Length: 348
Image 1 (cartoon, rainbow, N blue to C red):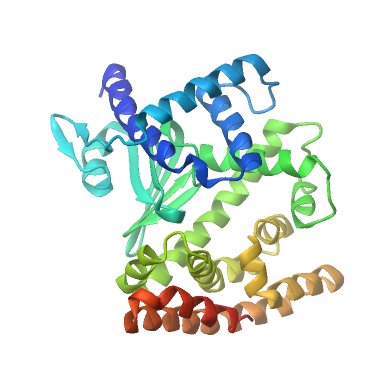
Image 2 (tube, helix red, strand yellow):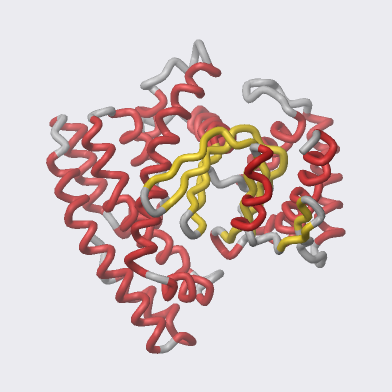
């Protein structure tokens, strides 16, 4: 595929990214939205992460982007055309079969609140692990406002190196406002961000992409255990507190299956600090034993409590997840309330 064809394909994917952003841009708080837009501008303009952004230019771009989204709010997602064939934008497998020879990777899937996420990028690595495939993506030609560093779709795991690097930068920038003594600060202290931003980001990205893969491997295993009933339930819970709870439960299951045991086994403190610092409020609320085990490790340098809580978490969170599925199966219309109650009574 020549450069012109790649540009045309990227424009088609970017159109769908704009439509998705037009529908979901209001999902964020004002502070989060403005931070994401600043970094989106940086990506679109190809600016270095540490560069000072021109205030007036960003303001003009932001106004123009919001006007574009307003015009696209009711627009339809468009099919993706590759080699004269047109594909549904969520048919990632078929699209990638056509793009593989050109060293390109495409993904179309649903994230939190059923927001569609699309991207087109350059293939860096293609790995086969038993029943699933890992696609590591380098630079990206098209993306939406929120760029998840990883996503599991069926038997394919997508790891987005550029998006992960940018996410780490955003976390660093947010932490720098007050520089609290917390898990994120301990993770950043493992690198020389004050004197060598780019090398530190590269080193942290390399460590964390391995941790992200561990989580997605856990997601794959969790999917095998929970089946398609989980996905049907999740779609019925969109825009309810039960959706946040469901995602937190599954994330904990995935991490107790894969991420935590592996991070503990490596003995490398940096990714373990970052893992704890990156937990959402919901995940902390329903799994206080994990925070206590982390505090024990900080105090004594012994990972025994962490290993124990990961082992108990595997059985606990699978049991809770299956209970949520059963609740939804029994009464789909009222499942959200029952699931909220179940999770609230099932903290560990």
